Image 1 (cartoon, protein in one colour):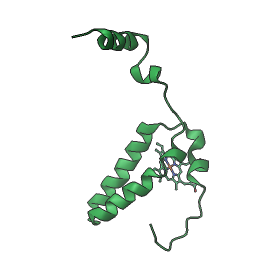
Image 2 (cartoon, protein in one colour; image 1 turned 45 degrees about the horizontal axis):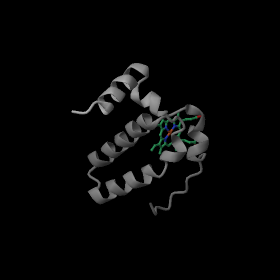
Image 3 (spheres, helix red, strand yellow; image 1 turned 180 degrees about the vertical axis):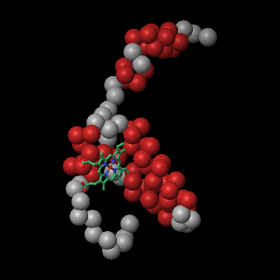
Length: 89
Ligand code: HEM
């Protein structure tokens, strides 16, 4: 974000790729960091900048992606969803 601190740690991918993190893990941490930033009375425009920067890490931190089957929740939910979709009115 333009500060002069130099980050000397591992890349976000190196630090997180073996942790099997999904979108929910990422959003919990991102929201927590955003809330903490808000509480410190930092101007909203900066809080939003922080949010945008954090969002750029998502692809390097999240390594667990779900199939549509898993998102729906297995056979039973898939059948219910298909029935609802295919049944007119
Ligand atoms: C915006 C999101 C995140 C940021 C900016 C972030 C940032 C960092 C940083 C800077 C490190 C240290 C890297 C190093 O020098 O070794 C780290 C390590 C770590 N992070 Fe995150 N992190 C994020 C999300 C998460 C999430 C969602 C989890 C788990 C729920 C997590 C768990 C860990 C763990 C366990 C380590 C230590 C890994 C190790 O030592 O092998 N992080 N993170």
